[in-house]
Image 1 (spheres, rainbow, N blue to C red):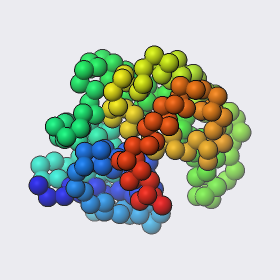
Image 2: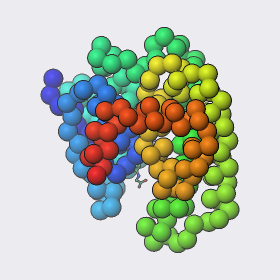
Image 3: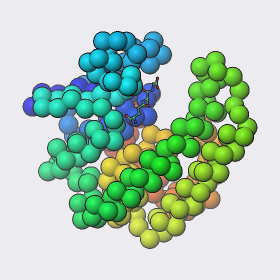
Image 4: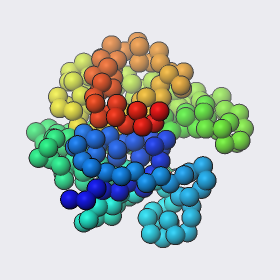
Length: 213
Ligand SMILES: N[C@@H](CCC(=O)N[C@@H](CS)C(=O)NCC(=O)O)C(=O)O
């Protein structure tokens, strides 16, 4: 089995999601840097051959070519299910899908929005944070964390009592809580804090963190 190729950037949260899953599986992979800063993801050849929407990451191995980080993680969790169970097989499809949908609908969008307003907007020369939008995103994160706190009072991980790709999906943005000035939102929720302490200690996540530097 030759090493899989991940076209992406170590600074991209979507790329990190895929790398964590590969690390969990102990799979060999090569990260081929696509510099977003240099606009390489918009290069017509890259768009034609790797990602029709001009984004990262894209994944390739001897049998498949895929884009969309969560789809890649699902594929990898299936491919390496003999080595590590990240599919929450015993949890049932409905609970896994519900947890996946919560992440995609209520966790990821406000984090992405807040990170843009508070960090990337200035960095990209797009101006100052919009105070109204910051409030909206913070309120959405507050609501999502309230739900997670009540959920994690009853189970260890976000999809049940097994660590799954749903937990993996959350790691890259969750690591931004302090930079986004919302550390208190975690500190004041003991079950959410306990979950974060548990998942952020995983060797696979730390292997990717070391690459981020
Ligand atoms: N839903 C896609 C999102 C891909 C995406 O937005 N990637 C970001 C990096 S995390 C990107 O390529 N941004 C560059 C751009 O939008 O120009 C996934 O999960 O793979």
